[in-house]
Image (cartoon, rainbow, N blue to C red; front, top):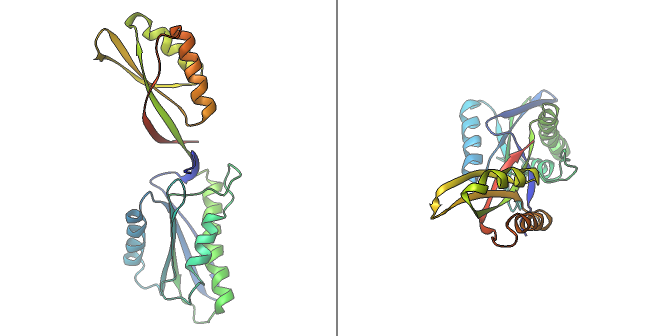
Length: 228
């Protein structure tokens, strides 16, 4: 079952962090990515930008259910780069207290310093690079909670539209807008609430009280929104 909320990065920003091990430099670049194409674009862009680097290893986690996951070692010994990077993303502690970061891609660019690090050294360096970028994101409050909202419409008598809107807002519902032309003889109010049984039942109960049971909510889908 798809989660009704998860953690994301602020859109449009890149978070960077760098670690050094035996003169090898590891630059981690963390970015929001809501599709595999966006994630791959980040890899391609950094490969062009840092074309002198030896490696451009990557990992990403995408979707509310975090089912889309990928790790790429880019020539490092199998399992020493992409896998520990992916584990750092999937097991990172988020401000919510959960391990639910998604829609995120990270690339670690490596410049070889002349000394072999060994498998253990590589795993540590790649993992620590990603963790450093995640710490940087947390320090600058770059995480947001992505919440799924249930959407409804409600037919409202013209004369009651303002009062009903105020009362529904006070009860915790969002009112994205009211259309006064969609329904003959009435206004059509658009409503949104958190996608939970409790929130939907509370809204339905409030509507029943306002309309004295004469009107019912019509479900019209859902949408995702970012919340601080």
